[in-house]
Image 1 (cartoon, rainbow, N blue to C red):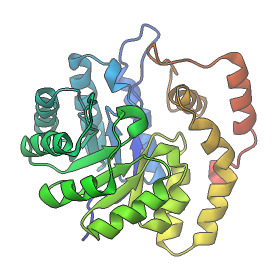
Image 2: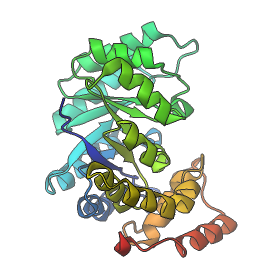
Image 3: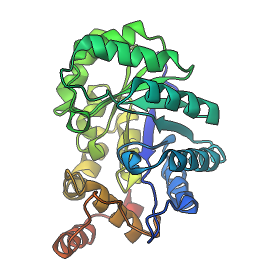
Length: 301
């Protein structure tokens, strides 16, 4: 099976101004970075986009802005529509499709007693509410829901447009293998988690990644190297960048780190995050600058 969305997707942060309002025009350099770095698309309104901190009006503003800027650059757009409510997730899916999204990304709703019957009901409802591909997001650290390879395979088999999985349940490499053994080539699996396991994931059969890693050029170079059979080049790139990959992918402050790095490289004018998302203290900034001053230049990729 060929996968239209195969490749590296840049998960967009939501830019804010000093007054905490959404800065729509600040998406432009971020989306330009996605294009020039070789990404095939962008993702908005995910965890990286602080979607749970946005009003409905702000969600529409983000979608309209990202879709307009991305389509002008021939980039695909995936929209996160996750919600605690089946009714609301379906409404968000309908809205994303109406505005022109290429696919939607959906994490399971939190549930006091998670069960596979509910997961099937939840994903069937959102799948049937629209006509675009559904990306299942398996991120238990955020959703609180563990999804077994078996239920993921069942969703893929029963829902005709559930073509993709964004896998963020560590350890991801062995889970990729377990899922692929059940689904064959019927499910395209993306990594995430800041690219922490991308080198291994690609060799296990992942078709790309969706992450807000602040230097998407690095991930594109790794992906291109693996695809062309140059595993040694991919390995060197990965090992050269592991110090930053490790530091960026910290629970809690990871988003603030990414925004700081993006501001430092000039693609984000303001690194503001919305409380209660934690900001960086001075010691963290000092540690981060030390790492950024000692990693290879992007120009050397």
